[in-house]
Image (cartoon, rainbow, N blue to C red; front, side, top):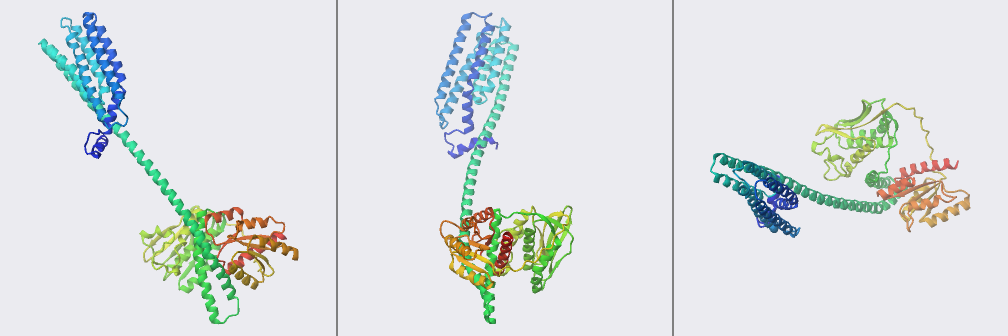
Amino acid sequence: MSTAERVALAPLAANGGGLVIEPVRAECIRTLFQQIRNSFAAAGVVTVYMCATQAPFHPWTEIAAWLAVQLSTQLLRLWLVARYRRIPADDDGRRLERAASLNTLYMAIAGCVWGSTAFLFMDLAQPITVALTLCGLYGISGGSVPGNAYNPAGLYAFVGAIFGLVMIRFLLVGQYAYDVLGAASVGYSAILFGFCRVQNRELQEGFAIRFENRRLLAELAVEKAEAEAARGRAEKANLAKSQLLAAASHDLRQPLHALSLFSGSLQSLALDEEAKDVASRIQSNVAAMEKLFNGLLDISRLEAGVVQSHREPMSCQDLFDRLAGYFDPVAEQQGLDLRFRDTDLWVDADPTLTEQICVNLVTNALRYTRTGGILVAARRLGGRVSIAVADTGIGIAPADQARIFEEFVQIGNPERDRGKGLGLGLSIAQRLAAILDSRIEIRSAEGKGSRFSFDLPRAAPAKVAKAAVQPDLMAGLRLLLIDDDAMVREGAERLLRQWGVDVALAADLAEAEALIGQTVEATGARFDVCIADFRLPGAVDGLGVIARLSARPDAPAAFCLVTGDMGAEVLAAADAAQVPIIHKPLHPARLRALLNHLASGARQAVA
């Protein structure tokens, strides 16, 4: 079925085959009347021709009478056009179809007027009149094809009437030559009918395509509107998720942060073996919860776009040595053979991001390898270096190989055993690889193991100065801690005083400013480090407090923001303010390393 037929049948099917005409037919009728002015011009030219060529052979009274009738038919056509223009634009088609029928009747009348010239102007005694009359009739009938292709019935009526009368005129003569001429004229009319049908089909197809395009554009507009609405809903849902995550993470991290500080302090005390075991179990469970929060934090940082790549020449062997230090004890405990192939290759990459990718890949390999081992190697690929982690683990089915890079997806862990991870490592690794303009590829077979790899640009070896070992700077460190949670302040104070830190505690900005003034007045020295919680009472958050305190002439030498929030806006704000940020819960070892780092920078700034 053609496009025109599909469009034409649609409204009839929708209306049970009633009187409502199809849109293609309606458009044909409208176009027919819109181009009638061209028919007036054509009729006028041929009328003038007919009168001028017949004037030398016939009395002016006969020509004038025929001309009067011809003008009357044109007035009739004007009446039809005026009637058509009164049809409303939203007409269901009944009036349009009636207008088309009246036009067909008019064309039959006009055909009879033109065909009458075969009796009025053809003088057999003067054969030239026959030729001149036929030229006019052939011209007017041939010229009517384009205009009436929108309504073929009108052409059939017009041309049929003209050449029907011409054939009758020649048959009445009773001569063979005129019979042949009449038959030829009828044949000519049949050719015009064929041309009209072809043009009508083309016009209908064109209109149908136009309507089809309109329909498709309308559907596209609807789909676009639906897509925009869906995107709006998704953005709102994502915002709600971020707000929920931020609020929930803060509310959960706050007591966990205090628990971590208290448990760290507990392990520093002189305890019997049973108490030490309990303290160790507490710290182990705190570490498990911390691992979940840190995974979510990494995802939030990546979504916020605050993770930036700082490239430099990096030794693959140094990377492998660090990884061996992390994972050799774990592999030995699991009875696995973990090997790092020696290499002299260097890459142009961010050392921190590259190491995090490898840590996640090796962790994943150790988690899903029961027997055998893991091989970590680097090899040259033209101008790049491929770093690969291959294992003899359980392998991954082809159907699951794309899913494993999604968040919280774990293969073979339906019970969600936290000992098997959280399903975030590979997702984070893939996003970090994208920041390095790379991609993690996988080759795996069930029961035979897996191979994860990513490639980086090759770099020339660089001379790296060996970093000096930093001393422990805890003893005598002057620290100002701002947190509105009394349990966090108490836990932090216990732990920090065990490390020899001179700690002062404040619940808000006012207390912090008062402590700074009192300390400077009493000792003449300012605080080395200020650590502020992000969520504080009042209108000013932790970043605002840091901004206010850093503007003071007696401001602490170094600042750090502590928060349990993982929302993208918090991460972006801290990054914009160039304030170091650390997330709750704070593991005692991480807190000690942070304070050493801040103290070192603060004392260098004072010096």
